[in-house]
Length: 272
Ligand SMILES: NC(=O)c1ccc[n+]([C@@H]2O[C@H](COP(=O)([O-])OP(=O)(O)OC[C@H]3O[C@@H](n4cnc5c(N)ncnc54)[C@H](OP(=O)(O)O)[C@@H]3O)[C@@H](O)[C@H]2O)c1
Image 1 (cartoon, helix red, strand yellow):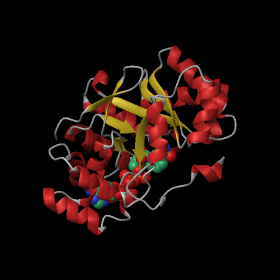
Image 2 (cartoon, protein in one colour):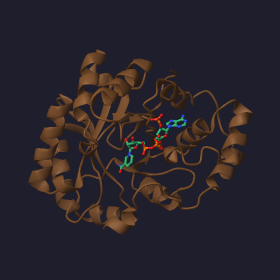
Image 3 (cartoon, helix red, strand yellow):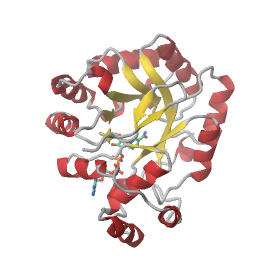
Image 4 (cartoon, helix red, strand yellow):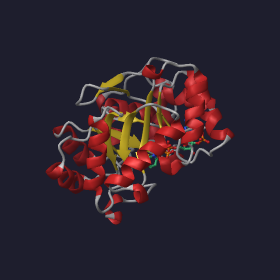
């Protein structure tokens, strides 16, 4: 696997621009094998969450990999019913203990729910106490971020949102850039729903790449951190084999134009 570029967050911490997502990777053998395979293939960035119920297996795979802790970038998230100041601190302890780690690299508020400002204060405490190297949010639209920035003392380092060519949230990306918040793409492959798109196929054919690789390369060239999920080694390797070609400006524009504001997951605007 080629070396994955690092992106520097506004606090100087560096995150590998490609990682492995583990949502819907079944706890037990599937999660353990999936993460073990990814780590032995060269992945160094894993995105989990307390909601995914596989932190124990992620932790076991990390421990058994023999890879130095400082070479890994591990993200987890506080779930909606764990939010609030004290509850978040307790949820963080539970996640850390399941992961069998002394710190996580990135801790995120999974969704904006009422009272997320209090949750953020807990994340700020964890950050100041040195128990997380970076803190951020997920599924925050511009209005959620504006509200957070009014009361926060630490600007989130990351906003992890659904982002792919059919949901190209250009304005949100610009807003995040202006505020030094790094965008991270979840469901970057839109869960495989439109890998038969002709523009993606034609673009891939020019470079000997698959539609999935074209999408992930489009993320990289937009400066986005991306975390495709696959339980299959061959696809994990395919998804990481995107650092030896370059889409042209015309390719990028054609892919940008696929946007239809189409979601495969929940819409944060409908939640809160
Ligand atoms: N913050 C949030 O609210 C949030 C929400 C959703 C997801 N996420 C994070 O983002 C990660 C990725 O999102 P996701 O899992 O929803 O979807 P995704 O990565 O867009 O797509 C995963 C699906 O695509 C398939 N796939 C993977 N690589 C492929 C390839 N090269 N060719 C064809 N099919 C391929 C996978 O199947 P196989 O596994 O069978 O290969 C799986 O069905 C999650 O795992 C999670 O870590 C965060």
